[in-house]
Amino acid sequence: MRLRRIAAADEAVAHSQLVVHEPEKQKGHWQELFERGQAIELEIGMGKGRFIIDMARLHPEINYVGIERYPSVLYRALQKMEALEREGQMPLNLRFLCIDARELPDIFAPGEVECIYLNFSDPWPKARHANRRLTSEGFLVRYDQILAEEGRIEFKTDNRELFDYSLETAAVSPAFQIEEKTYDLHRDEKMSAGNVMTEYEEKFSSKGNPICKMLLHRRR
Ligand code: SAM
Image (cartoon, rainbow, N blue to C red; front, side):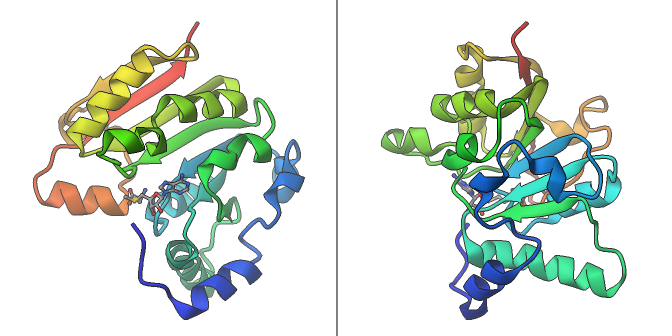
């Protein structure tokens, strides 16, 4: 997703107090950014932010960081937060990063993150772009570098090719193992309990596309 360049977006992102600037300086000290010291969870490729904002509102006992590489897209999440602030409903346990997720190990210390959400990640269908997929081997290595001992990864998509590729990648990962999976989340009573919809999930499930989900844990 790359929205038409919004003139105000770069400036809004650069000056927002909700966006963590120079995030490498925060490595190992992320808890200090939040009101309360509690588990940190990330969404990588959050798009316009519906999922991570709803999660932050539902779970004040968790600190969230939403990651999106394009300022024009992140700007939409900042606008949602402004609207919530006007209503006195803005969650205080949410910050944003405008970075490429490749930089994660420079930004979070080993064990600093409890959970990584990957929702409707870009499929990069050409084989020569496979290493850009957020579930590729290279990204799993990065997640291994920042996740806690009991850390987990939750991945949702309606793209069956990307899902199958991700299952194969996870199956041979030395760090992670597949704990649970479903090819039709919204009809899976157990795995859909507490499901929070993303923008893309709403759009594709309303067209009748089944949503796939997998849950990865560290190998034991
Ligand atoms: N997660 C949202 C949802 O489910 O509605 C948005 C899905 S959208 C298809 C994927 C988003 O991931 C895009 O906004 C894209 O810019 C972002 N993205 C893709 N690769 C990324 C990366 N390496 N680092 C940060 N963001 C990335």
